[in-house]
Image (tube, rainbow over all chains, first blue to last red; front, side):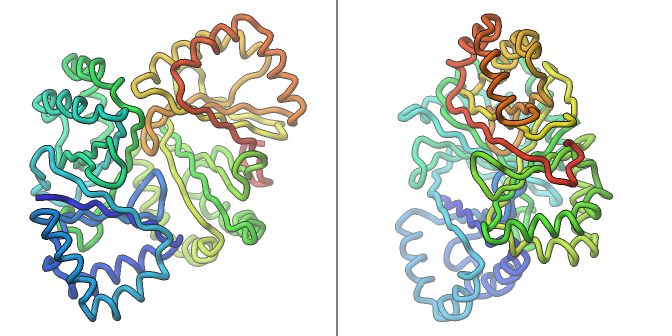
Amino acid sequence: MIYELRTYTLVPGKQGEYLKLSGDLSRKIRGDDYGKLEGFWSTEFGTLNQLVHLWSYADLNEREKLRAALGQNERWRKEYVPQIRPLLIAQENKILSAELPLTPPSDTGNVYELRWYRAHAGRAGEWLEHFKAIMPTRDKYTRRVGLWQTQAGQLNEVVHMWAYRDLNDRAAARAKLGQDPDWQAFLGKSVSLLANMQAIILNPAAHSPMK
Amino acid sequence: MIHELRTYTLLPKKAPEFLKLTRKVGFEIRSKHSKCLGYWTSEIGDLNQVVHLWEYADFAHRTQTRAALAEDKEWQKQFVSEARKCQLRQESTILIPSDVWPFTPGSGNGIYELRYYRLYPGKVGEWMEIFGKGLPARTKHSKPVGVWSSELGGLNMVYHMWGYPDLQARADVRKQVAADPAWSDAVKSLGPLMLEMSAKILVPTSFSPMQ
């Protein structure tokens, strides 16, 4: 299984229109026939007016085949794409390989946190070993959704996603985590492997499978 | 207490229109919902930007405020629908006031300087400790408005803001400060913790609570 994370920056004010087209028309045309939609969110904090969506494919060959087929889909090409193009300023995508299985929350009404860290060149694997080793401790405090390594797009990068009831729940959980001596020891060992760290909050769209 | 720093990049030809709309309509409606600490335009650094700082009791307060704003018809119709046509890009970051300096709104200043540094991951605590120890020497020459670390958006960031009567006064203060050995020792220790340093000069708008 491989994942694709796409981030689209919209013309300010066009988010409602885009979400409607994406939630109605795009879902009708493509369903999960051209890659499975795992989640669809709008961003809060960081760069605003962005939409983030996560797709899964059996493997890279399957992705290539399905993306080519989607490009040939008449309704997609003629009905959908011409309507969304004028709403977009920038599109970015990343291919991610899962380091731990994706575990979407079973409940709804969550906010999601997406964090991405760029490691010093060649050090992402080492950081991931530390991170996976501490995960039993980390999982006591927060609900993990996914942990990936970026395969194409930005290199030397790890991506992780977490679910929280709301932002106060997040702040409280992270404060408790920060007090855990094992977690502190993990940070001491691992943080110097990283070069840059970013975090944003994602709010699920109405048509997002993860909510 | 959390602060939100919002930075909007405007279309150069639409910047005057955005400011007029904010001054005449937007700011008053928006201020009914939550407390604005300051509202500036950029003078040096990236131009055609507005920078504004908001205060919330906690994340829940912010979430409620943003939800109420989305429902405020006056705000949406009289301001947002028009303002959107003037914006190129919007960014938001959550800043946590540091206990090394209590947030103190400036007054009677012609300009404000916002300085923001990206640190090596994991170095915010150490940076704050050294900066805090240097502050008694630094504040003999001029006092900061606030010192913060970032919580969402780019991580491992520190921000600090200073008010000055004008650019010449800023240059004079910075010259005195550089000659103060207690402060220059602190600066020497801070250097190796930092990856990138940026500063922008901001001018308060006529409706900014901080002048």
